Length: 223
Image 1 (cartoon, rainbow, N blue to C red):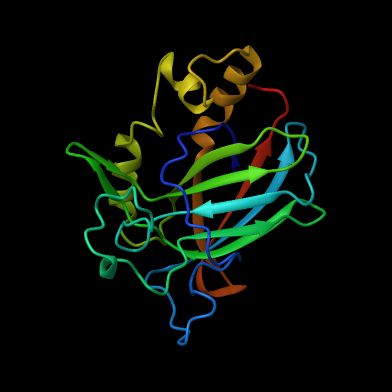
Image 2 (tube, helix red, strand yellow; image 1 turned 60 degrees about the vertical axis):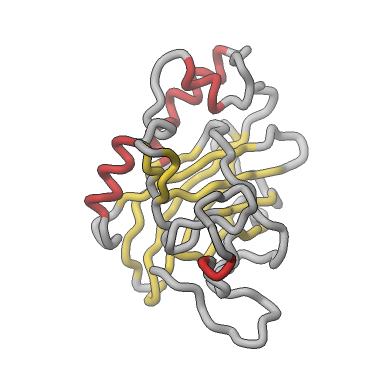
């Protein structure tokens, strides 16, 4: 199972509204229309650096909608609130069980123009919190032949400077500090970097969408 480790650029933050793990509809609305986009199930497990399950951790997920917009005041691409999907939750929260397992139901996020020469590929933002562990902030990316437009997504992944950041700036960038102060952190970041691309596939237990599996690894005292 791919492992996502290392704190990366947190990106636009979520809006704290509906608090559940199903992002495909907004609870409390008069109509229960579903969000636009291909359904994705994100199945995950939270462990420590020794692969032991971390129970009852809190996992946050946030992302763009099917048009590449965040529901956030910092997203300059949103010129009018009507451009947002009213039936999409945009962020979610799940509580891992005793074995560290969690699940989200959501949609495939869309890419977006980060600058004039940089397109961010579709990705999920994750934050994991558990008392006694460092907070993990990371991003995961997409792979899988069943995803529409996967060739373009692969191209965007290869060109994305966050996913492919190299050299001395890379570990410091994802460590949330100007300079990493721990050689162990550097080694762990290097080991896990390329494993943040998650393969999504068809699964007979999830007839309405694709499924991807990942592990989120929590550390202690790394930074």
